[in-house]
Amino acid sequence: MIGYEQSEQLDVEPARYFVLVTRREKRVCRNCAEGVSAAPVPERIVEKSLVSNRVVIDTIVSKYCDHLPLYRQSTILLRDTRVSLGRATMDGWVMRVGELLIPVVAAIGRELLAGSYIQADETPVPVQMSDARGKNHQAYLWQYGAPGGNVNFDFRMGRGREGPAKFLAQYEGILQTDGYAAYGRVGGSRMVHAACWSHARRKVFDAVKLSPEDRAAQLVARIDELFAVDAARDEGMDHAARHALRGERSRPLLEAMKKEMEAAKVTALPASALGKAVNHTL
Image 1 (tube, rainbow, N blue to C red):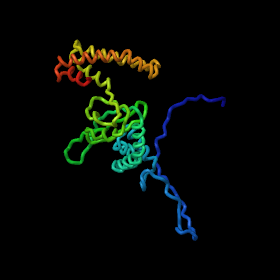
Image 2: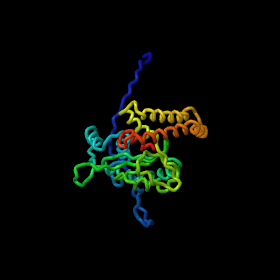
Image 3: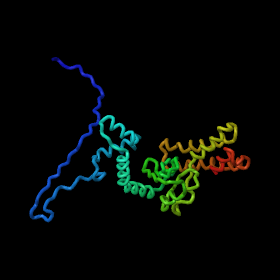
Image 4: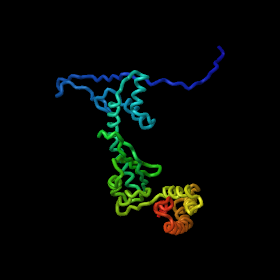
């Protein structure tokens, strides 16, 4: 033999499920109060469960990172390994892991509230009910986060003010939201409520779609000029320099835009797309 011709391929070894046996010695001690003793049982995510921590963790990762529902995981396990795990059992694992993570969620919330800037929004989530109505209930996930940092999700059955009022009760920093009224009277006495220009632009742009030649197009152009000023962050400008630039260029744009919107409010019908956009922005 004078050598090899070598080639490489990506291959895979399917997951292998097996029974893990843990044996703990039992010792007799004549002079000990307990008489017979054994090493303690290893810590388990689900006490007295017939599955290991690894199986529970893989299920959670598949559900929340790979978006693989529990019923599909159960079907795949039965098909590929002949292991039968009911969805109700797997539901119990998910609930248990959620309970263990509650202190982590609380710590994330405390870190957010101790900071100086939070963005908040709410997302509808359909929830199955057991009251025989035959349709889902519209619940909400309230999201509080800092760009590039922590995020806290607070589940609520409704969209009322109770959720943000409780979470933000002691918050004293800047809160940025859309124009939803539930955020209007929340937070501590020194909290600053900042609006969102992206939401404002979206509503004005909707008016442009209906009437491209209308004054809404000019208002969109004004907002785009504001965005262009803030694009200075991509040029390496620090906060102080950007603040000075905003005072020089953004403030005149805002003053001109406010006059134009106040004028549009007089002539535009309140129920029209432009009227709604103007009222929202003002």
